[in-house]
Figure 1 (cartoon, rainbow, N blue to C red):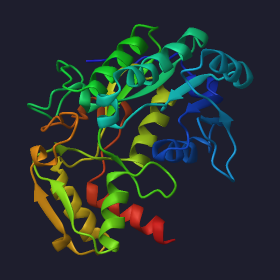
Figure 2: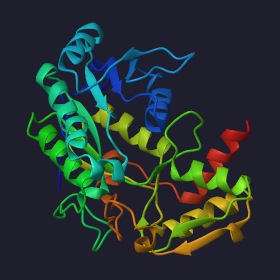
Figure 3: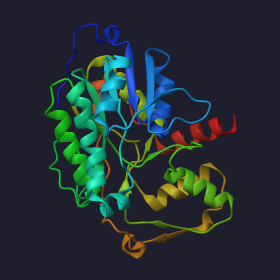
Figure 4: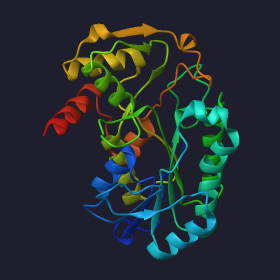
Length: 303
């Protein structure tokens, strides 16, 4: 298993300045919200939304990476910048690798401190998930191959780096890339019938839960590979039913289908998901049940 190490014993006091790439996506928003209570946060992204503050950063631009890192002088970089559209990656391998691999190579060529890098259960083939950190990787699409290559880049850099694999990250977050939760809630509220696959299995991950993992990883100096997700392993169809139930929407609008009926460009792993035993012990955390996460999200969206 990957091991716990600390940069030194009072590591959490040593870390003061954190730079987040891809900071205005749903994970970045949750992470910035949590970390800002304790650290100085610099948010970077390709586009800075109105009424937000941050630095423009294209991680594929080495000169711009150098300029931003020189300004921020971070103690830790949390790299959320990624091309995550699976079908778009399949259609454009060069773009997928330039962002997902080239971007982190650029950061590491300039920054010698610890990097926390977000990855995915798509590095596995989906034959027999959920997977532990020690299971053999075997991606079946370009997105998975690019993320696995990015992991190897990060872990071959130096021993202070951490890769956090997660899966089906969700929140109800206006103004960010649409998550599965956004799509289900908005569609059902509009009275639209939706087709949801019944043969893809994961343990979907609430952004706030993932943010806590990142924070505790920074505090402890966790390194290597770590897996995280919520406490329930469900099909995408069952996840949609749970969403409809918690948000009090019409479940009859949700129709089950098989993945091959979608005729998507990229193949999908079917039995994915991630075992979280290692992180539970290393960081003293329990993954939340999906229903609890959804109730908290609904309450916040209505406040």
